[in-house]
Length: 575
Image 1: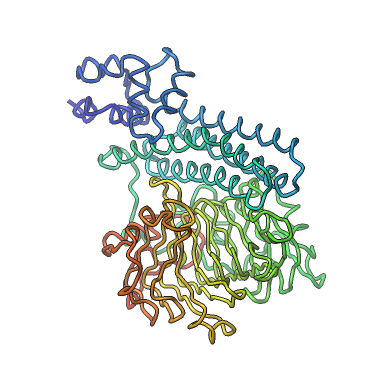
Image 2: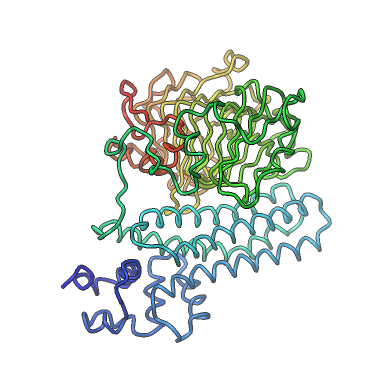
């Protein structure tokens, strides 16, 4: 008997996984055949039993069974079709919540509530797009892409969940009971999206235990050539741009457009340059932004994929704005620069929100672009400087400044060789470096700080012993942050981590420090929450560039240097 027949009947979810495998290798895999091979598989003979098995790993089983039964009826017991339906019912529920936001907006008279509802509509469109992308990818893949498929599905489902949660976060400071109504409208959508993630996670756990035939292995950096051959680039990189990316990013190749404040370029504003982005092109669109301060709100739209911005230096080419929460803008919309188009790369650029600490939340840079890279950039602000919102992100040799939660969000974000400079807060405040927003234990997200420096800026330095600074606090229930092989100066309070609100998430967060150095790195007096974990180097390797965000392909293709694994500080493993 073959591999398929040998494992039939172990459980309903394994059968689901084998359906996926069978589809990808082109082997007929019908339930009647399964029944002949093993009598235990008879549990999937009816649609009802099949749905119960599909929903088994989910946290919201009742909603899962009810929603699938309503659309599947007795028409199908094919697990492959039921998984597709799980995506579709989640999409439909998000659409329903989006319509509810429109109705609520028509009824409200509070300006802040109205802005929050407008943002909800936008965020729901992002959630629907990512769910739809996940469905489309599930419907069209082959076995050689099984690893990439699973990674993408998890990232997109997590992003969809995050957009729904960001909608609710936007009601901070709003009047009336609209927030409760919107939360109720989104409850079903949130549960169904989480259920879809649980189903995919269960399948991926099983598939990862198999030595699948024809599957493309994930190559370790040590197994690959250090040379940039043309075949190692991701599919989104055109041949014409591969030569540009095959060496470190420079201006030796002519950019598509040049922006200069002094009029020596084609445009004087970044937005004018972005307006020329070709709508139907897979080419990398290179924008060279000359030295200068650009006071404009810049949005890299979702359809603007593979944009590359190159400046003259992080303190020479600066994009600045001052939108903020106190003056009536929801945090989500305060960003000076918002990057939503996948495959974005920035080098030698400064991003700033100049609103100041008294204006509370004021984002300099918001990123939801998948496989985005920031190299030798600077993000300046106070509270909520960098919103690493969703998807896979990589920061190398960057400087991030701020006071409260100045690196936050729910992306799979890795920071290498970066500087986190803590600034002087307002009177009565304390500083927190990170606030990670993971909600579900299955989400593939975290803030990972590797070989970085956490220090005080000159103005705050004399006050560091009287105004405490903490490494992070749990913004959401499953908040996850790792700090490895970094230099932590004496500004960090010996507790290390700060609660968000009472006992919230202290048992469910996942915070870890490993092989750090500096006067603030001792873990002897760290808080003793259940969520503070001591892990081994072997475990920590799961959160490296090569394993956590699979950066060996897409980061390597950019020409940006990176460390693939987690080596001690005395070693070097850079591409």
